[in-house]
Every structure is written in C-alpha cells, then in structure tokens.
Image (cartoon, rainbow, N blue to C red; front, top):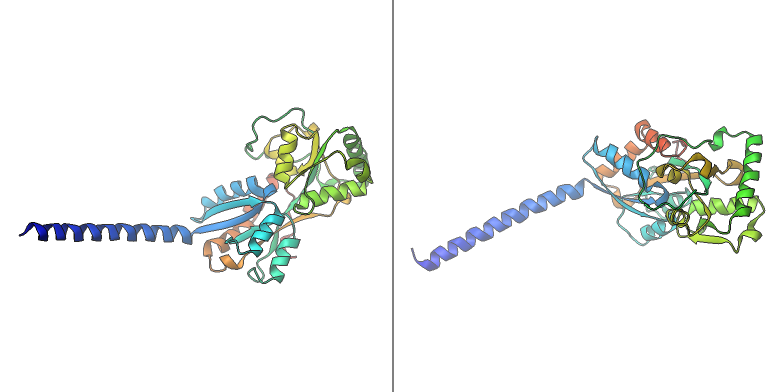
Length: 293
C-alpha cells in the first residue's frame, strides 16, 4: 500500500474520531442545557435560593443557574429579551406587568415568600461579607405576632434609632421593593425631611446591607433574611411593624422563554411545596398564602 493511501486512511480515521467526540460532547451539552434552569432572582432572596438549589439537587437533576439583581433591573432585562426561565421578584408588581405584556406562562405566577423589613444597626463592621449558613433562629418578632401596643413601642424605638444616626442606608425605592417599603416607613413616621441629608442609597437591598456592614452607613433598612444569614445578635435590629409599610409579597413566575423547559416547571412546583416553604421560613420570611394573587 502506498504511503499516500495510508496517510489518507489515517486522516479519515482522525476526522471520524473527531466527529464522534464532538457528537458526544454535543449530546452532553444538549442534555445539560435541557436540565438547566436560568433563574432571575431579587437580591434579597439569593442566599435562600442557593439553599433551595442544594435541596432541589437532592431530588432532581435540574441545574439551577442564578442571576441576581434588583427587581427593577431584572424586569427591564426580561422586557428586553433576556433568556431567563423563571423570575423570582421581590414584589408582585413586576411579575404582574410581565403577565400583561404576554411574557409569562399562563397561571404560573404565585407568591413564594413574604418579606420582613428590619432596621439594622450592627455593633461592629463585618469583615467577611460572604453570607453564612442560614440560621434556624427566627427574628425576635414577626409582623403577624405584634399587637398594637407592641407596634407603638417599636415605632417609638425606631424613631429614636433614626434620630441618633449620622447616616441611614436604604435601597432605591424606584428599583427595590424593600427600598419602597423603607420609604413608606419614613413617610408614616413623618421624618422624611430630617432624613434627606443623611440617606445613603443602594441600588438594591444587597448593596444596602453592604453599606451598613462595611461602616459606610451607621444603620440601614434591610431584609430580615439578611441579618439571619449573618447571625446578627437580636439587639442589633428592630423588626419594622407591619402597619408602617405595605406587605412585601414576593411573586415568582415561569417566563415564556422557559415554557418548554420541564426542569423549570419542576422547580416551580418544588418552590410551592411545603418542603421548600420550610426552608424559606427558616431563612427569615413569613409563609405566604400560596394562592395566586
């Protein structure tokens, strides 16, 4: 056999082997992509979602890919065609708007969490900003458990804390529901004018927490889930009474992009389960009414 024929056969064998390898890789990629779920999630729920992702992985082979940000910015990205399968917002308004624009799967929206707002004044700067393991300790009070007298006393203490602070952090009310709730608190306490020069604003509640944790603000309005993540002492935060702001009901919805993603549908079903809701409760959220709003 001539050298040219041997070389040709070797080249054909190489090409076939390469195509076979590429084909195998393509199948593996397709399988991975099929089981991947892209979740756009509000900043305040990121750590809780990571705990849910770990638990979901023990039950299902779906892979949860997390993209976090302020609810307002994620909403804008979805309107512009961002390829997310699921949207876990920190409010109800944005998922409802997406429904109105025809960008969601019909009847997929439900309230997955009810957020709690706290005023946090740490004893010292937190050097490590990485969240710790979620604590099983609940906040010292919940909005549902407070009676009118307790709420009045809590409001007075909140005023005292705010009056003593040289700087107070809150999330941008136009982008972040926790920031909007904080603004409502200031308005209901009738102290917005005295606060204007002392406010430090974060884009979302995650940035707001960092402003306080690093000492760039003396105190701030953050999510109860965040202080639990960092195992903050009870004496360092005050639960904001429910009468001072609108409920922070957080809705999740399956987006049109994920309409044919079976793993996304399974994760939405899991999110509404009692197993997932117990993880959410332990993270510092009160249990919502899971009926669609």
